[in-house]
Image (tube, rainbow, N blue to C red; front, side):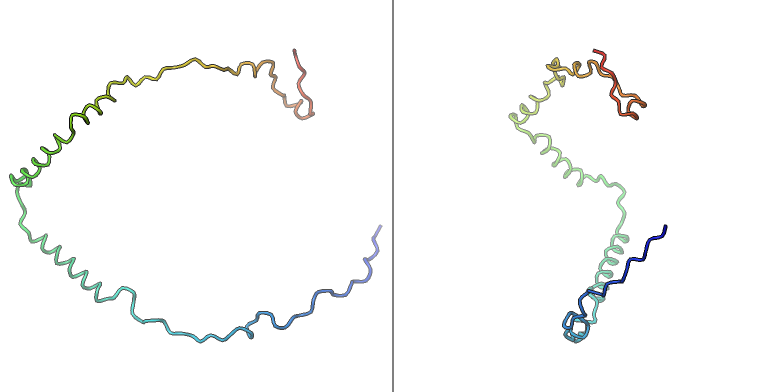
Length: 142
């Protein structure tokens, strides 16, 4: 059976087009401005000066004579001075403080549990597939 047509279509009740809303004609004309400066933010001259300084340092290091023994006596003396200060860096009180923590065995005492959850599983029966499908609960066996 066919339905009858819905009847007459109601007239359009949307509001009329409003004037004065934001449009391209109502926006204030903004003048286009030129960029503040045509120079890049990093000046090419500064960049060239930096490259020149870096290449001068590299050339000076390459031209430096290679030492046969890096561990020269003058360098070893400076290292020995630093090591001498490092050996006596801790006072007796500080040494005692650090030794006090070394006496512990590292074992943690195990305490017996105060509560168990064995009673929660008592009488539990899992719900089978067919019982779940039918919406039945398993029979209580108590």
